Amino acid sequence: MSSVSAALSSIAAQQVQTQGSLAAVFAKQQAQEDASLVALLQDGAKNIEKTASTPPPGLGQIVDVSA
Image (cartoon, rainbow, N blue to C red; front, top):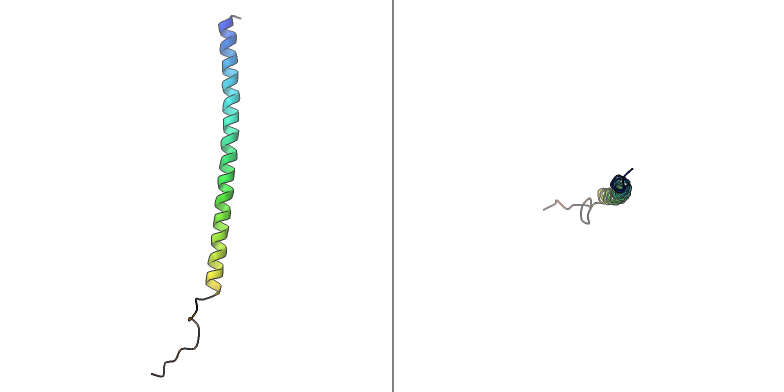
């Protein structure tokens, strides 16, 4: 095996390792973004439930229509 072949083999192995490391980093970032999005959607759903369950002030009260 020539020194060039050994060097190329070593470079290829490092590239595979780097690609694997980058893939793991990207997967972790994507999981964090997904978790943030889920939390945002859950908070929005809670706000919608709260808004729908309590009408704004002045609505649903006695209305004077004697005029």
